[in-house]
Length: 197
Image 1 (cartoon, rainbow, N blue to C red):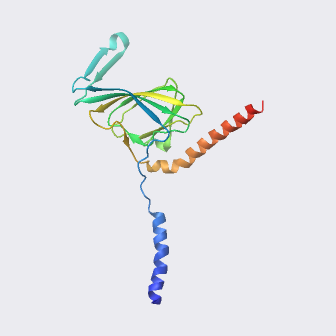
Image 2 (cartoon, rainbow, N blue to C red):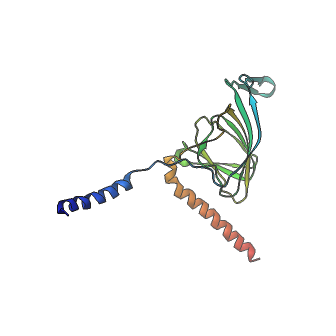
């Protein structure tokens, strides 16, 4: 073997290894984990039938306007989250009105500064604009959590669109895992305490 060829192979190999460590591979779509979804109802609304207006500003201090162009599918969905379950990163092609009916969920928005989550407890409601807003919902609690969502989707489209994990959350993942580990150790300490009684 030519000593020069051997020398080139030796120099190239560490360079290739170093480059492979530096190159960041984009995250792949993140499917749900442990989540159980039941579609309770699905109804089709022709274009114009969701154009609603109700002006009760004087009597109730309330005003509603919706205008939807194009046919729509309206879903009523129940999501059940055992402890540790999550939706995976995703979006929807339309808005959702969500109510937590049991337990507590933690919602992470892809564009949230410092990866700051929002926590929703039983009885809390929130909206999800969808339309490309990427998010993940997780049960970080110790009991099962349940949500009910009403979703308005363009007719015939997928209700849920998986999304890649945002790069900002790749750095936050260790702190999220640490948080979950701390919660799990708190549960174990509590169980041990009560088992001694």
